[in-house]
Length: 268
Image 1 (cartoon, rainbow, N blue to C red):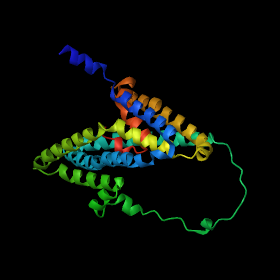
Image 2 (image 1 turned 90 degrees about the vertical axis):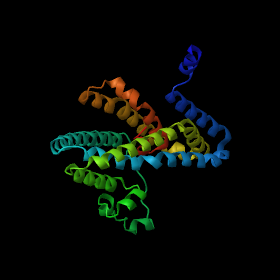
Image 3 (image 1 turned 60 degrees about the vertical axis):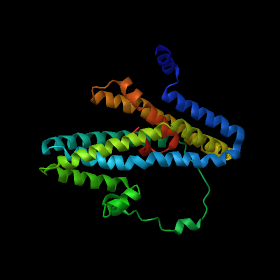
Image 4 (image 1 turned 180 degrees about the horizontal axis):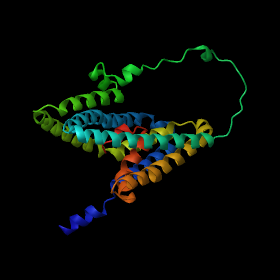
């Protein structure tokens, strides 16, 4: 019993396995080069599996958790959510301004391109925020429209006397979707290895040298925001300590940084 326990303690942690997968992917990509193109389907499959259960989980959880609120608690939650959202927007705008000032002014020659005469694409704001077809919004990963639909359905559930008969199955479905996502998350070291190996093996060194300043600025800003500013903000407005927030978010942060999709890691 003690030997098995010691073996479990001796195994590397989940974050360590992710880091090993990333480093191994970099080494494999640099060593084999373009021969790593075949491994792209492994990384794409991993990202697709991660996204498979996330948006349905968000939809089901929003409907269930908003539907069980009372009118008083929902108003208090709305006020707090708006304050937090404004705070996050403020942090984002400040970081964007600082990042923009980090780049030097680039003087280029004037030239003509036919693209200058093309009309820019028109944003379909109604389709983005108004779910005229909720199932199409789910299929298209239109997150604002899905959130609007779920909030509206949850608010409608608040005043129903027999809402518990629907909320209990929704809780079971949310737990099932969370369990599905946890099963997929176990494949993270393999998925990270495939994504990083393909990227490191197929990237053009000339293009990398052109964007290395942007990558350095973006990486430093992302690290400061995700490791310093956001955990400190959360610890300041909640009973959680800074290190508790950092430990809870380290695995999703590593995955979001490599995958480039935060939605895939929102239910880690």
